[in-house]
Length: 326
Image 1 (tube, rainbow, N blue to C red):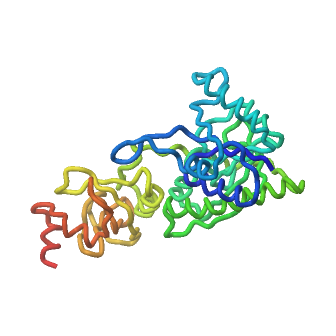
Image 2: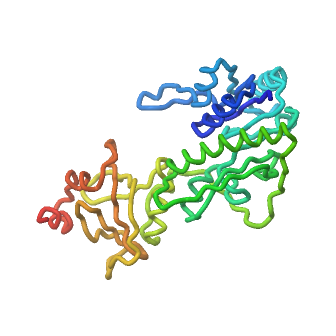
Image 3: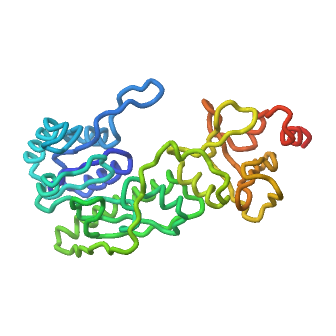
């Protein structure tokens, strides 16, 4: 089939590679404009653009797709490119732009979206992170026929993926990217054979995965330890979970932690340091103890707690004196 692909990050690149490996023609790729990245803030192409160029596929990077919007010239150029590509289908994966009606209707078979949740749960921008944060036991991939709503179209195919205790947003992302690549190739094969069976999404069970915000990074120790542990995993690598520690001018990032639901807090206020050792930094929470296992100082690298505490010297704190005597 002739397939136009629209996507931006690594999650989408995996799907593009799978479509190409399955032998389909991709006459055009849409992706976000190059963005500044790294310490030098140099403009860098998206993973999807890099993959497309490596295969010699033309790339369009419009700032917008609304023909009557702020970037109307970009949209008109994109429309011309799409018309020339004459796609049977458009596949969309984490593209970053809302597709207006004219785009949805241009391909013969419309637009398929690779969404990283079991719809209608976690429609929206951050389904992987919100599923971990909420303590869901499973998630998955939904191949959806796109309409003008926010992830409201008919589900064409699903793959279920369990969420395990060790999953971070990064590791679950990688598993879902692979499942999404397999699922979209299967959906295209079924489309060619006339075997797709669209299923309208139920009205019950709808939740929305709000976009991640840096303001969510600080850990709130008035919450239970199990909730904070999930939050740390959900925010790895972005935006990261942060907290302040005595003796340090800037917040540290917490990359790994263990909830000790039955750990003794006594009368300690939430956020109090209960113990410091090479095994962990124990923090009182509203319910249970959170043991910090991997941290990162501002400007530093991720460290296991045993290495972190060797370079952390909160002057005159009882915990530091205890650590020196162990």
